[in-house]
Image 1 (cartoon, helix red, strand yellow):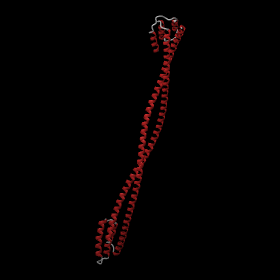
Image 2: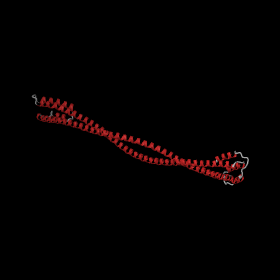
Image 3: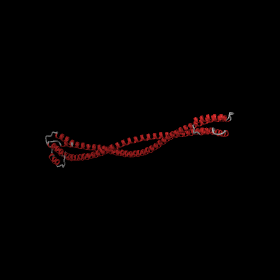
Image 4: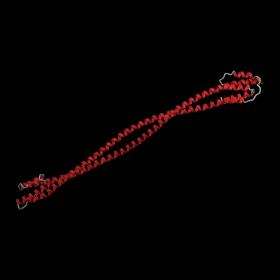
Length: 351
């Protein structure tokens, strides 16, 4: 409508002194145009009534008509370009939404799998830790038992050594006393000294001390039999000490073997613990990355959904504005076309 107003002002500025022939009839026809654009018809009417030349008016109206058509064509082209671009933007946003939604589903599935794996790995790590604790407890128990066995062995051997030493000392003395040429008085004297010494070293209730004490109460043949028994006991003590030594060596070997087995198992479980711990660390990092990515995806989804809504709303508003604008301009073109046809027909009739 701006072009019409400008044209009206230009037409109003044309100086004419006399009305051309046929102008009054043209004025009546222009007034008869059924349109809401009274500003245009008024200016055209004013120009003609002021003596403007019809030919000049035809040219001006024709130029205006062409300009309006060009404006509409340019608007149509701009609308086609803009609405195509907006349509492509909407399609692209829909694709982005679809891809983000699918990626979110995939990431949620991966996160669920990672959580399940972490639960399994943690259970495995707990089981390994329990095995290591069991091994440590077993090793501690073995060491305590070994220490107790070693102490018991040492005590037994010390006791056996005392008995053997006493027997090694008493048997020769008893043998000498029994076969001494000075007779019974000397035998009893030696025996009493030996008995007292044995009691001091082994204790009054020790079997050997009791047996030696018996030699003071019997005759020589009986003492000889006791000496034989003492000698047999000595040989038994020696054999027992050898057996104790062998058992101690075997106990040490068994202990070392068990400790070695525990060490090997501990090494294996320790490696499993380290590997499982590294897997848990890696999976935990994977979980953190997945959660961060899901946060970004959810943010992008929200922004994309908002942008899609805004783009659609803008396109609807743009389409509506274009439709209103086009309808108005088409109406204006129709009005100007009618006016142009009138002035052009009158111009031809004047020739």
